[in-house]
Length: 432
Image (cartoon, rainbow, N blue to C red; front, side, top):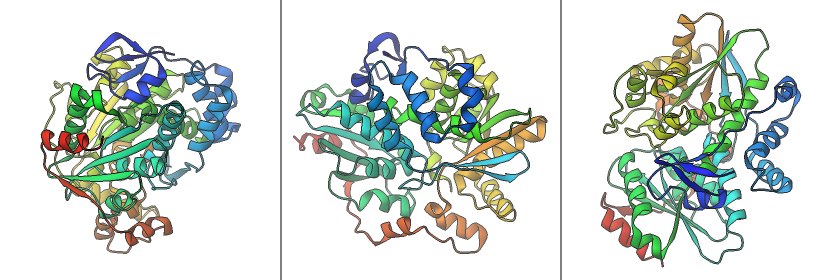
């Protein structure tokens, strides 16, 4: 399979170049040239399949032209080593728990897949790969832990000073080895801009092999489609339509769900649920897409004012904005609404993190106006990762899983960085 750039569909590359380069030279994101559609017989029996068996099939049809069957099995087995349970919260409302991986966030799936695939693709190269990652929280921890100790790869994580939760920060600033954290004096969008500028700087790219492990990289983005298949396979078969509500920041997760739909998964509708960073919900309501400065909220991983995966959303609908708006609804919520949702659902016996709370709100609001649906919201992180918000909302302590609490014992090591590309470029040039 070839991959094209969203900025120039005639620009085609193979899997290795798409993964190792990360971003196309024209700043476009790579997309599969064709999206294979799975046969009806697969969906007829996939409720009886394991997560791994579903993964072999889905990844197989996507990557069989570039990887052997044994490599595909190795990739899936490395990625799907933890569950993604579907939990009924109330009638017709299900939480897809994506926080059972090593860093307790949904990005563990994509990060593990990406690190494994990249290590396969560079195995015979003697050039060190520098992975540049901008994070508003969970991406940094997932990528750092996914690539920790991977030979031939150095990970450099840029995060906004004072705008990432303590636990998220400790998950990528205490590891050492091949992981370096740069604390940028700015917001997430500034970090993302510095990374993109580095990819486009010809001098840097002549000296260093730079790539990304953000969701702009197809190896981070594509495997996220797997848990949509798995969740759907575990839903009750009751004749109701199915809607997924996706708490969204950079919108890679939503785009992965739509990829699954394009592959034949019979999802009827999507909800793009955000906080006050509402660029995409406003677009979906009919406004022009206009990037904005990000706003700090209690759901900090979604504090993104210029979502990098927006071109992918358009590309999935052949750049037809109306088709996108027909299939995806937008919704956004304030911090006070988010906190009230955490409180409400806690009385039902379930604890939400602030991002899952936004997804929950998007789903229940949709269901009020659309009888005949059942829905899934993505619970993207363990509530303990945002314990300050959750504990303040509920007035009670959140018990941290042992592996999460262990990060608090580490020693934080960061390099302060101004929001200045020349300073960042100078740092990278010093890595030669």
